[in-house]
Length: 281
Image (tube, rainbow, N blue to C red; front, side):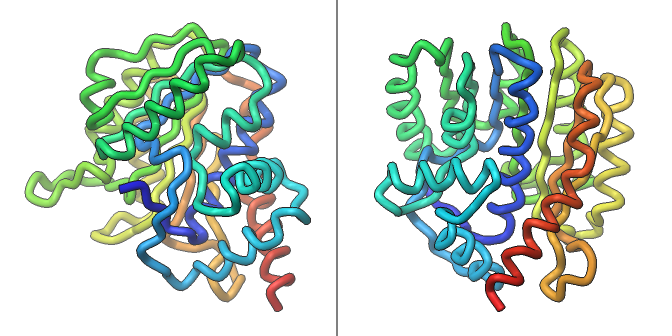
């Protein structure tokens, strides 16, 4: 079912994503986007309201006043959808990216994948869209066939529920990412000669998966493939006194020396979040 949470996690993921896309405009004419957890082009079901929903709702209510790439793109998509639902990463990409692009969208939920297929079929009429593949199933199956790209830059997005730094076969969940999955990602990246950017987000630190352990695991796996961690972006805690210990979006890069310009992202995101906190007071 095409659902969205409508919380600080959505804000974190897509604010960071949109900033990456803006930087890539200076370094690519053809962007290849690969999304492991694609979600629906616009999800309209919000079955659960959590304790950060008010931040999301405030941001959505003030999109017309926003100055970030994320807010401008969201505002455009919000108007196009009649003010309902929440767009996925591919929709943000197509809205922001004004050059040529290719898409590989993996989605395990069949209903959601069907919506993606209908949406991507429409995109193919655009001269900017060079290809659009929707894979219905676990991204691991699609990646096992290899990822081939003709883009100048490959932008990967991984938005699981949680990145786990340890594997337990009895409790493994397809919606999580485990160490062997990271090994798969880095192996795929190592086969691509062009620049690679990866955004890997995690929203929980349960079961001993602290941010420190996750970052250490990512670093250990990435070294052999040439990937390096550029930045980790964390939202502020609810009291505003320091970063959250749960949510985190990690940016990795390979063959992209210019990616270091992304490094201040955490500071900038937290400054943006503080602006909303001040507006809600």
